Length: 313
Image (cartoon, rainbow, N blue to C red):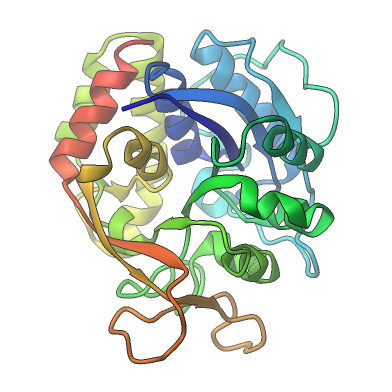
């Protein structure tokens, strides 16, 4: 596989952190042009902090980290400290970052990167609310046709929601932004809860992270141990879903995943189902397909890939 140029748009979050680490450990597959931060799991000042902590943990302080939007397009910010802890990266005891933020706004970096590179060569990888991506599309509509692909974590169909009965957190936080992105015309691949809830960090899988023995392996094990306490209690499962690394794993080894090219619409009006990803899995409407919506994962292969890549750092 040829190397993909990507922008990781993120709101770290322990699972975001693992996704970033795997991407930075995979230079033969992935060229991380930059990391753009958005408010989501925690407010923007913490997501920018956490992204830099992760880059330094990976030994990659040269990665450019940009601050983006600090609130959704048209509503108040909802955060998830109840899941990720007060910093968003609770679990390991990691030093405060020393690397500086990159100059400029994340939205402008996204626009400039897509304009500066040949059309169809830059993939956007949103791991949080879609505010930065939607704002870029609003500010510069010409970039939509230049995007190689948008591979995002968000939504759910068979699994319902994880922040409301109908909505997954990333989409719920900024449904208007998600609506803009899903209607933009760029190729979209969705990693919904239907996939991530099959990628569970069991004890054996977390032990494999710890057994790497490096600061990265130990920190990832500590992150997932903290992260899983909420979801294990909530779902009664043997482990917590590892959501965001599915995006990066797809870029490296897409055959780990199975899905369908279907129509996905975002609910932006109903208070009952606000932020729902209305996925026409069964093809019961005449709405044109606009996204490849994943529903299957080789979980053992996924964790083997993550463990092998994290062991490089």
